[in-house]
Image (tube, rainbow, N blue to C red; front, side):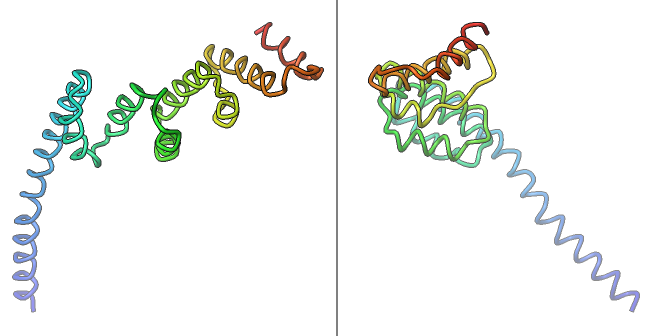
Length: 165
């Protein structure tokens, strides 16, 4: 019986080592190749080579920095991109830094386009100095959509609080 277990152990070790080593080696090469493709895709995007960018980015869907590549591409056309594409990105990468960055860029594009309804739908408070400016625009959007009628007292208090920040 002892002999059987030794043979089973040796066969198992041979099998595991035979499958593990190539997979490990491929993983290193894949990561290195993905890194090179990522840098090449960013370079193609910067150069305006959409065909190369599309080809390379399609191979990087499982690369950890893929959302950053998508962000760079979408950020360059945020004012013209379909709302559905932007919302999809914001939803898919909601816990990432690039999601927050894209939302801020989109909010600024919405301000420029005076798309106040969409601005109010997409506005989120931000804790930094930029957040104060975006909050001011949020209040301005509410004012614009109110038709400039009587300003509620709570708005004035909010403006005063922001102004003194």
